[in-house]
Image 1 (spheres, rainbow, N blue to C red):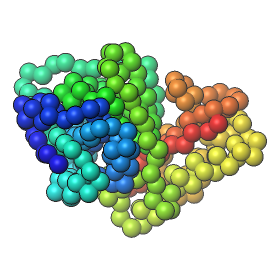
Image 2 (cartoon, rainbow, N blue to C red):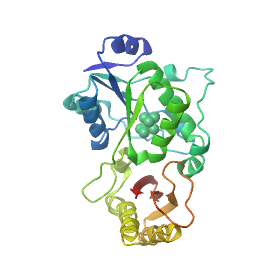
Image 3 (cartoon, rainbow, N blue to C red):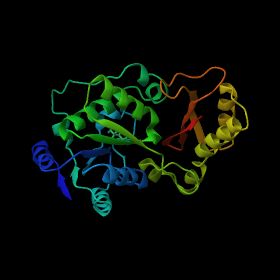
Length: 277
Ligand code: PAF
């Protein structure tokens, strides 16, 4: 497994890789969700590359950029075990040198949900992902469904900017009690960790109601809210029943939907989602 940092090193290491390349962009502090994407890429591609970069431009000033968990040695050991050909750990000064002024903005899809609560977030995500694609030139790029809106935004950007690659979205990997895996779960104190299962419980309650014949969007939102309200440590930011391709909120009858939510447990902001229909 080759590990490179500068763009010059990356370009020569990339040139030495054979066949279709699968790229898994990450911000590090890897967990089983990331590793499942690496394993899938291992099966589907001749070569596998992972980028590890805590991208400063997708964090708002009051967010957790400084405290975001980092452990490069641990990440590299995990990647070596699952079989990775190339790891790129870009440096911020090379990604955003002084005088930097070029941004990628995806419009409508970034307005609701995470975009509404984290202004500027998707501009940072789309810009860094475009830069990673330009440098790595992968044939496939792998993202997790936990960040469902991010996956849609990146698909849209790939289509709109004619990147010659396929976006692959891997299913959410969960802890045995249902909590979606996330690097930010490491912030949770034991009582908060227990409380954090409320997101999955709320999504499952709406899924059961839908399966039992409740297809009314407002009723499904209410079912999720009611479960979230049972957990005193959880404060919800949004609860959504949206059209899965456009993310417009559904009013009335639900045939297919993306159920999603963002909830704060203490200072930790958690997101989760589930597809219906
Ligand atoms: O999902 C993430 O970890 C990040 O948003 C990504 C796609 C690596 C861009 O920084």
